[in-house]
Length: 271
Image 1 (spheres, helix red, strand yellow):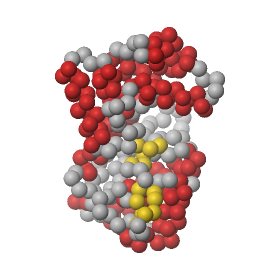
Image 2: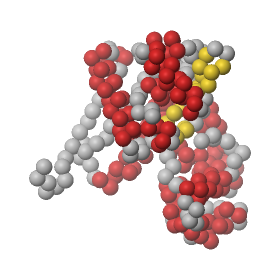
Image 3: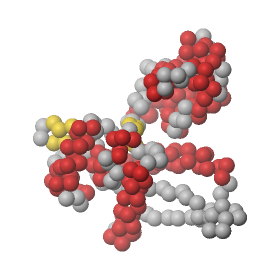
């Protein structure tokens, strides 16, 4: 998502409706309103510009759209720009959007079919490595920095180029997107990717010094009803850590992995 303060919050909702309708021609405005928790007439008035949603309704709608916390913030800021409570709140909303643009938060979701052929850690790693300032994207340097076989790097670059994630200009490879973000889509490919990353973490325990890495774990009791909120908090934390770790001049590539999984069997289970 490109964070532009010249867009309308309505555009974001309309874009989402168009995407859903293109996937299912029977998906109607009534169905969209149901998913967002608002009536069809209310949604129609928003689309036509006759009405602005209140902040609580906007929050409810953004959750129905299943946006992450950063996208929700952008949506609410655009709403505040168009329907400000005060001049100060309008200026604060504009400042928040400018901060989003400053940090270049552009998350491009990999289509499931594309990712099926990319179930290994080095594909997103190569894309991200190419975003480092002043990095000379040659296959040889990528191979050395990521400890990969040169043929493996060249094959990955060719595939990434075909998919539009990297480009070749002036004898060096460059990323076409600043971030490759992989959402937890249930598929064999993405499960394989997570296993790949976990194996790297296991190697890092033995191969990297304490100063170079950080591993921590905690065992907690969990109310299952809090899981959805916990997942949103994790996304927010990942975004905050990205801003912190990039600093003024990023020069290294790290993997930040967070695992939250159940240890217990269902109550009454004989397993």
